[in-house]
Length: 349
Image (cartoon, rainbow, N blue to C red; front, side, top):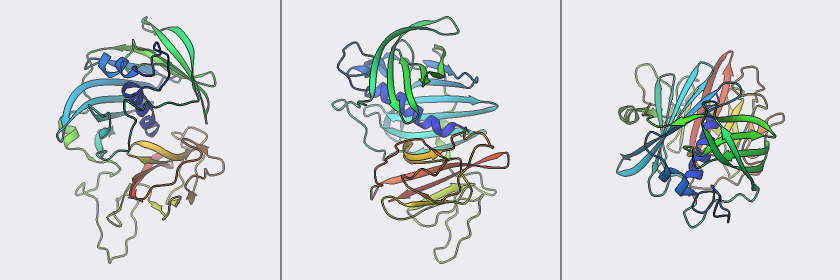
């Protein structure tokens, strides 16, 4: 159950492809002109496969263009293989701005969607994203296990997890070659090529359910209770308590008022993330693998911006205040015995 972490990985890949990461060296892969080494250098069907030392696999695919609700979009898809689980993520992004339009996820044979028609601002071509903590180290040769050799540019960034080292190359779809944390290999390029096709079809995208709502016997629509009737949350039934809040999944989440609210959960959780669309704003996770039922869990209540004792920050340790009028989504992962369960809550501050 590492799929929520993939949201951030995909965002990083897309940011490389569209806007680059700043810098003044004309020879840099990432920097002004970096976008020319991203999507424009790829053909529909290009793909890259990365593997972890544990044998986990991720396959990223560029699927070309399609139209969604009148917007010309580019499509990117990622297949993730962890143990016996397969999760597929598909993103539709505006061709001109790079803004996310539609997010699809397939788990256990069921396709769910998240409407991202009002995403946060992203840097434009005249304001490249730049992290002052990122430094270019040099270039290295890398040969995949399948015998393909590429030249990669190496960058290092100091993060809350440690010293991150990323190898990127314009010769590889999506540019990513290798990632390390404090010298420990996280993932590396296994193979790449062309000819990939969609795993989530157009028809499945059009028929997808809203993200976070499990299958409900007798129908798939969320329940909207009478405002005058007290509601007892059923852990298996999504509830819409008022027009500004939509929740679902096996963990019931509530959020207080204000710019740094209190968050409560009905089950101890191993992972919590507050997002705008699919972009993490703040959260925490177990210091062990959140996909392990034996990993530490946290019961709450939680204060926005304050990581619980024993947990590990997974975004910004000093997040900005929540903004009035902005829509946020809280996602959590918990375990009930040996079975994982998720919860989600979407609210407007």
